[in-house]
Structure formats: C-alpha cells, structure tokens
Length: 165
Image: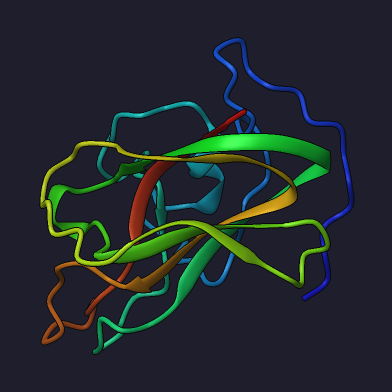
C-alpha cells in the first residue's frame, strides 16, 4: 500500500482529530448516499439515500472477512480514544479492533472486542492507554447481521469515526 502524504492535523473544537480528514479504506460501496468521506464529516445522523456513512463492498457470503478504515495523522500524536457510530442498528460489526502504527506497515492492536452483538445504534467508545501514532486503523474481522441470501450479503456500515487524544 502506498502511504498517504503527510498533512497538518487540525483537531476540531471538541478535540476530534479526524474531523475533515481523508479516510483510506479496504473497499468501498459508493452508491445511494454511501461514501467513505462521510466517515469524518461530523454528521452523526443518517439521511437515507443522501447521507448514510461508509459501506464496504457488498456481496460477501461470509461474515468472516477483514475490512478496515485507516487515517494518516501526519506527525506522531498521542491518542487514547476512538468512537465509532453505527449506520444501521443491525448492520454493525461483531469482532473489531483498533490498531496504531508509526510507519504504516507495522501495526499494534491497542483495543479489541469479539462478540459485540448489541444490535442498537449506540456509539462504540473504545478507550485505551495513551499511545503515540502516525497512523490509526479501525479493523473489522467479523461482520454483523446481514442477509447472505441476497445480492447485498454481508457488509460493514459505519456512520462516523472520531479519534481523541
């Protein structure tokens, strides 16, 4: 993977380090109001067909597939909390973790969960020991509920991602 060019990070007034930042994703379904750029636009709510968040490529017949969202923070910065807002109640993921890196190739897991089966729209708050990073990544290893019998199948759908010091 070619790493993104470094740029100055300008946190939002509330301290969100990702507001307006460019997300880099493993795959993306860019139709019907889904686009990766909505992950960091500061809009938490959904407007079906217009603003929904990010959706990985559709059509997976298995829940056990890896998808990720990565952010380049520019200079090393200390981070300690990520908040991920689901897009749909029953479309959130079951197994996922947060990784950090200084070089974009060697990753360290700083927070993880398996078996998150809360089918609700509550944001997932992931707090971890403060760590210095130039890159941060939200990694899904098991998708949530879906309909494998349909053409859409399993997929990842996320409304917004925030990162804090």
